[in-house]
Image (tube, rainbow, N blue to C red; front, side, top):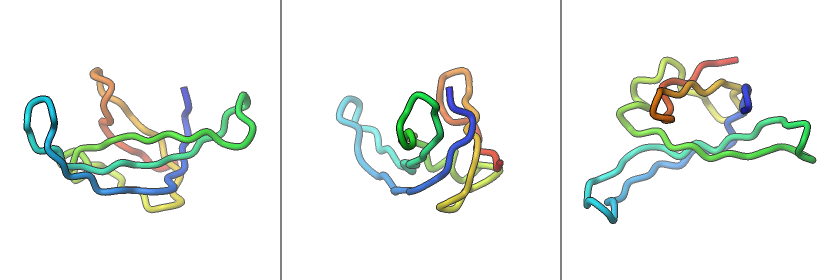
Length: 82
């Protein structure tokens, strides 16, 4: 598991779910991280709902280094600066 990420991109998401027809709004966050087993850097995309994004204690800007905190359901609970 990676500890420190760098935010390299953000994309607003707004669509209707195909299974239940519910509206989904949020942000895809694109991150890079260092890993001794990877030549170069690793990449990861995570989704944060609009409600959660608005309540984050730290909203990173592009280039910011951060840690991701997850809840017991495996969803982003918060983002903290490094």
